[in-house]
Image (cartoon, rainbow, N blue to C red; front, side, top):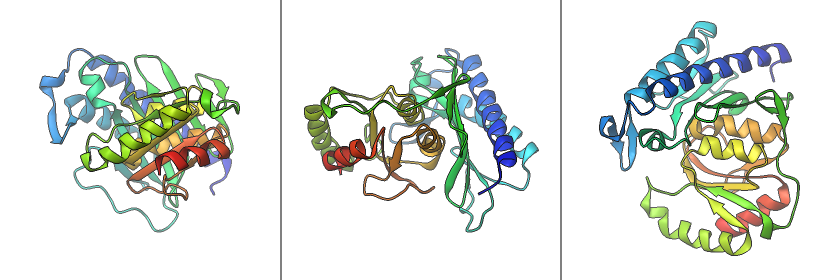
Length: 267
């Protein structure tokens, strides 16, 4: 694990890069719409805002850390994940592109840096709300200069849980619908915002008690993982075990007991 000084420098870079991307979001909001986007896959859009935000974020990372690797959503040829301790930056320049294109405020920039497959610093920045979440290993989790913690323990019937629809993989739809029935029956409700990065920040900030989704990319969750861990929560795969930097499921919650119960309902 790097000592505190490099982690502090990396966290500064993560924040600055996420801020730079979020500024692009603010400048383009309502100017770039759904009709301007390119289609990458089913219900998966990319716009000039994604491209400009990624360029702004990556310029900062490359200038400050030229020897590090970068895994970014809009890269045409992403690098292989390092098998040593080379730091790798994991960047989603605009998480919630569909929301953004329709003027919906649930979108954000997410920037994290990982070592040996584990996020060690990260930031999520929302231009519409003006909220900036960040964390680094051993330094706690923060929102706008205030420390944050996951929600206090409570009964499952009072829990509020976030999720994401399997809109890119309809093969998971039946499984998801079954899980929704069980979670709705056992909690106070489910919310789907359309930005996993913000949903995970909400878990870290105590706004959600838990979260699950069956398939996410590493740039969707890397910053959220370190936020939740440093805020005192638990993050794993739905199938069990810690998340790495490969695409897959994610299960998060404010406590071990909540995560284990949620897993019984959604696995």
